[in-house]
Length: 69
Image (cartoon, rainbow, N blue to C red; front, side):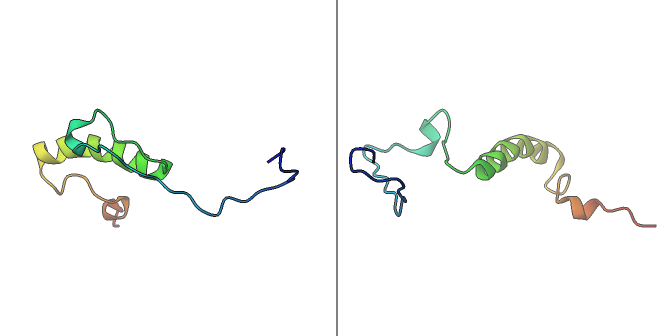
């Protein structure tokens, strides 16, 4: 941008081209540009073994565990 004499620029689009892709099960780690999604994927990997061992209802949204008086 400096060479063009521009003071600012705006990115209006982003294109990603995938070539020679392999199955997701064959990669060591899936990457993402979304931090919130990454956090959910990490949490999901921790929750799945617990649900497999103790059942699907052992972990749920926090609202489910509200105390009732």
